[in-house]
Length: 413
Ligand SMILES: Cc1cc2nc3c(=O)[nH]c(=O)nc-3n(C[C@H](O)[C@H](O)[C@H](O)COP(=O)(O)OP(=O)(O)OC[C@H]3O[C@@H](n4cnc5c(N)ncnc54)[C@H](O)[C@@H]3O)c2cc1C
View 1 (cartoon, rainbow, N blue to C red):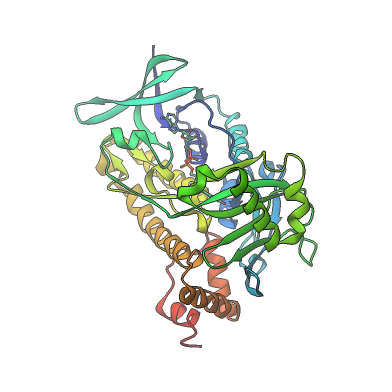
View 2 (view 1 turned 180 degrees about the vertical axis):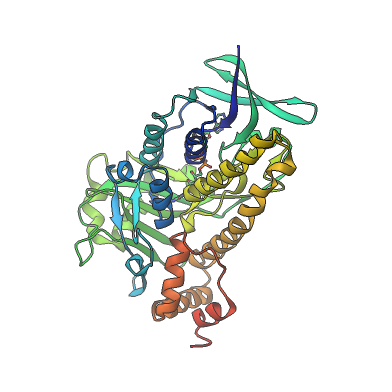
């Protein structure tokens, strides 16, 4: 059997599903292939204000708001064993949605899949794993995949790789990729708790920063919290038994009110171990194919915008594809405006995320003092606080200016 469609998408993550929605709304026939469902990931999925706008544009905001999630507008940064360093307040943002929604990744995926239910022209092939690309001359014309143990051909005018940071499609396309692995990863645990609220009765996010130590506490519904605790990547897979008990104790010593939740029966059953990577690829498009989301540009999660940026790729690529279909031209040159629009934004975010990882995670005592100093300076400057909130919220992608940096360092007022 061979299947055909206008667009073939490899990977039904946030990027692939949201692109399918945009293309279906324009009237294209879309197929998505998705390998056997991976294990459920327990980690906070922060949907930034700009991301909320993207869901609104797709007509899915009310569905998203109806999911188990926490609406958060305050992000506190504390020194472990010390005082508060600064507080980022989304309520100050000039934006229709001045708050973030925090949920779990499977919830957002569900919302997009429900949205796709409106479009019979989209077919998702579950349990279909990408194996190789099909070419005519140098042009990609589809892929080979194994669906329920049988090899099938999926042909399309254009193929989109949305298969995540370790993209096999990217390799098969011969696109060069520098994959940066970070020294630290995260143990993420979902616990039951009703103590996440701040003095205003709303759930807040809390980051605790120490010397080479980070604990993040994220409400993910009115009764659950996701705890992210930084762990050297090398130890992520072997963190069991006594060492896990030590981590539990350590978290409880940073925030004693978590003790009950951490020691409740079954509290550690819903956990994931996550090793962030950054992907920098030589090209986002070749003749007949393009990459989106983590396949094109995985980014360190300290900026918490990976899913939103994958959706943004879909928004721009869908418009560029309109032009390609109009001309019947799916060459790398015809697809180039997609990369030209998106790459500069993404490279700025990747640089910023690396700066965050370097400064937030440092164990060098001098750098720790510098970091705390920078956080306090930001906290004392309404202008910088706005800039930081707008950047995190995904609504201002301009880089920090020299003046911003000098002000954060306390060198100028
Ligand atoms: C610790 C951590 C915290 C994060 N927090 C946030 C956050 O708060 N907010 C946010 O916006 N982002 C966050 N991110 C980033 C976010 O997870 C990613 O950027 C986002 O999931 C990228 O979506 P994607 O669709 O490009 O890729 P993915 O979500 O990786 O989806 C790829 C899909 O392709 C499928 N696939 C892979 N290979 C094949 C194959 N051979 N054949 C068929 N299918 C295949 C996979 O099974 C998967 O379904 C975080 C990341 C980490 C590591």
